[in-house]
Length: 230
Image (tube, rainbow, N blue to C red; front, side, top):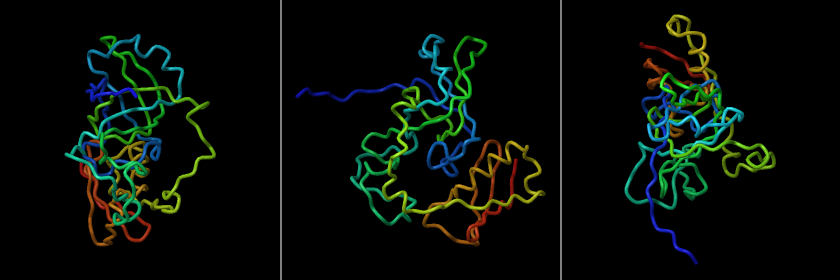
């Protein structure tokens, strides 16, 4: 049996997204298709030849690091938020950020490959679930022939039900947003950013989205935006 020792990995790029803090980020990639982001390569990897042919793919895999979820040690079980935060499941049966190695995996839509003025490639993507500044360790093309499994089963996630909300953005509250920004914000909020164990109808929640501070409350299945500050 061969032995493989520990090794270090270096970020090849970082993502630029509309989420400067963790609260509000979609729990999985693809849940908010209109959510735009860019991938900016580190100088050593900002090479046109490295992305040759990538523009012919519609989707890509991102291997990245949970940069804000680093802790010493690990637990074999975690508490998935969608099970109410009280039921424990094996860490390898979840996508929890608290893992033996803090690596994440996301499938996102590749909108375009741009060459910047200095010749460095920049990737424009949609549907990412990453914090602004998240380190990207690798990029691979998504292949329909091997990566798509229509017969797949979702395990305990399938039993958690539909948790999407109806979103109300009063005209006087959302007037500073463009139509595109308002549409994307609605998609983000419809996924219910609250922790699953917090359902307090009188509580006002808030998070940063792009250049805005968004505040909202939830009653039943209806989320109402109460304030947007630029």
